[in-house]
Length: 236
Length: 287
Image (cartoon, rainbow over all chains, first blue to last red; front, side, top):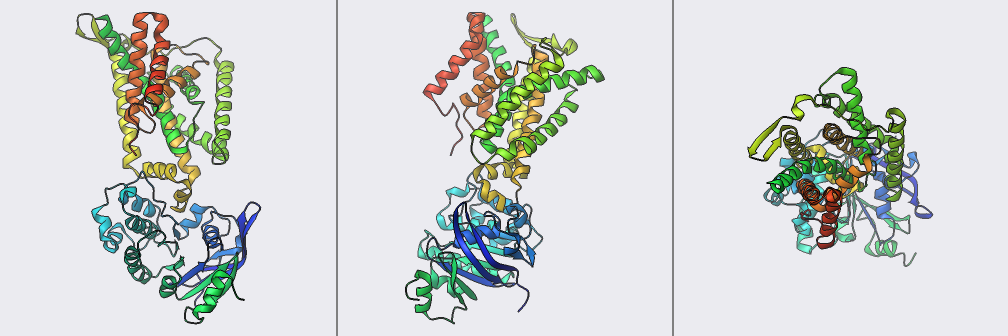
């Protein structure tokens, strides 16, 4: 296997006295999609926050291309090619749709993703580019959040709960765009409540439970029952 | 005609108040910080202009070529060194730091320049005027200052809504955490906001120095006028701030026309009236 883009080793992190992660190990290779599943409070979001620098940790716990980035400033990590589609979208509400996309690409690495290409991926955004970002429907806002992350031409993109609060038909539309995104060679971590959907697009998965890896492997490798057990922590 | 005259003069001084207010509004908008030292920064800029004019013999208005970049640099450094380390934890600590800067500026200026009130002489332009009607004439200088204030506010609007720096300001104001994920260095963005604010402060300081006497203790009153203009106009709207400045200027001029003792009080009363009836200001930003 090629050198991993992201490698996480015995990652421990938390907020103040509260420890949320107790020694996580995982790797994401070039162009690979990793599904990160687990119940609420399992530590999925904390893991993403540690990768993006929003939560501190020791340098060697998170490596990008072998380079220790744990605890670096979030903007520096972003400059190295890590982009995030945050939970709840978190668009800039005083910026228009196009401005939200532009700000994602302003200090971007060189690459294929341009405003035009994002508009080709999500044509509805071209129509609504002058609207305030918050005037859009939930699904369209999610498209803006994804486009904003793509504009940075990231090497690694983190999707945090992109289907949360959206209608099934809208979720289908959003996921329809995922293959086109992956075809550009970007690596991804996909945090998702919807396990079936996450496993359908990912090459491998990691299941977290109470801040530890409870199961990891390839989607076909474990049966449904094992995954459910790892997810909820029932039978061990 | 006296009343018309008073109102026209009030409008013109309102431009200056809007200039006091614009930088204050920008800082509050971008980093939710009330800069208590804003008025003292205006006075410090006035003294800086005085020193430069005395040293180089430049015309006071031309001194802006030096005062504006110098103040912007000072503003940037002040933000990075003094304010950024305190921002984000709670609202009180940066507020206290600006209060400290205010005290230090006032006393520093007192040591350096004594308590004597000073003024910048702008030469023949000070007395030039245009007669509009018998008994109603406009001073060229106040007119020029008003035009400059409108232009500066227009320029700030352009920066805020049409440039990548303005996008960074708005994004950081909306969601500082996600803005960082967009490869925006929060410390630098805040520094740039303070630099822009200080550049506007520089112009305001020069205009203040030409228009009126100033001394090291003049700052707090400018802060109040600026603050009132922001609140009257509505937070987050620079054109509203201009309107707020004009309303304040007219109120003061009309008050002074009634009786000189009423000048400042009338301004405060109008401010309280707006605060009571329309707490979000006359032209709140549409959300």
